[in-house]
Length: 162
Image 1 (cartoon, rainbow, N blue to C red):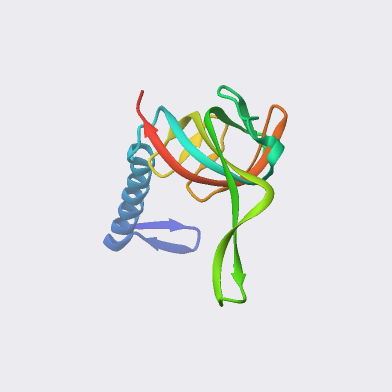
Image 2 (tube, helix red, strand yellow):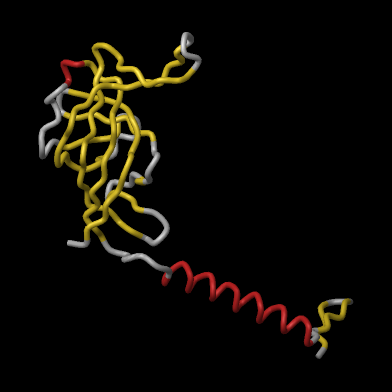
């Protein structure tokens, strides 16, 4: 088959048709994958725990169930407090006399282990709060609540399909 375009001849060969069909099939496969991969596609209630470290002792008891927490940097809602536990703030230091690394309490500081619950979207690859914050274990978090703030890490996640 020849198509004349001006002075040039353009030949469509069997190889050209196969390449075009292959590109179309790959595009359709990509679209199908993006729309039908794993995950619920809807919203879920996600329970997660974060540990906020190096907080002043006077912050003990500040986290109350039902408090709305937002991200200090992105200003996105992270959910509400379910419970909070306060533990001494621990750091690792080198004991030069015994030539080993030991854990030591930091005087005047505490850590808050805060359990949160948020409505999230699960798309199969990540879990995101409805405000757009990506949740993943190990994520560093800076948070603000009514009358307090802190920073730490997301340490565990527990999904509940309610």
